[in-house]
Image: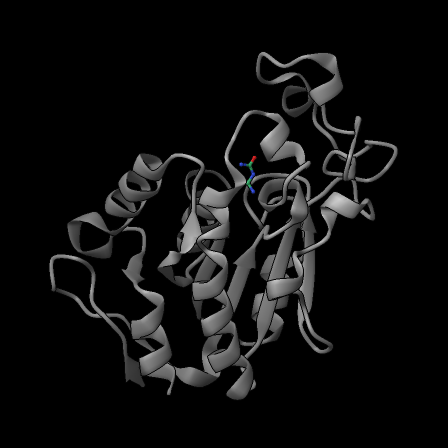
Length: 225
Ligand code: C5J
């Protein structure tokens, strides 16, 4: 067992068994992180999310060296939109050209196989790593993510990715309810709204890591080293 950083109030340190821990990389897709994608077209600054890339890459490198399992997720829909729920399609006051499935510079918004729906080069999956396509915000909904974690005998997950308060948060909450022990890598997850990132992490680790722990990437890399 290795001990990483503790939660911010310095209590209840995160302990993880190396052979039962996986790195989860949430939705580092061009749709959200790159100019011309869905996120930017919605009016967000993609530079804000790009800040997570180097810390995430540092952890990836350490995890790859130890040959620990790595699972990348993508928020992604089938091209016929058959896996898109009505509420997700209609949610938000958006012009029609910004609905899921519409065509932008990076291809169709959140559609599997389109240019925007690929993971950015800096943290792209390598052979032997897993990719889970998810139609929801959380990684467990209508995917084989749970079965994959169980098959790999994973009990602990270290989580990086975007955006903090949406897909990262949903996945971490779902993971805790299913018996997993999540650690948020605090500088490897970003939001278009910095205050949401901070508030989300603060809420998830409150009351003695009621939902999750957090640690900075440098602490995680050190613990893995
Ligand atoms: C969003 C995500 N923000 N991956 N997706 O819609 O967090």
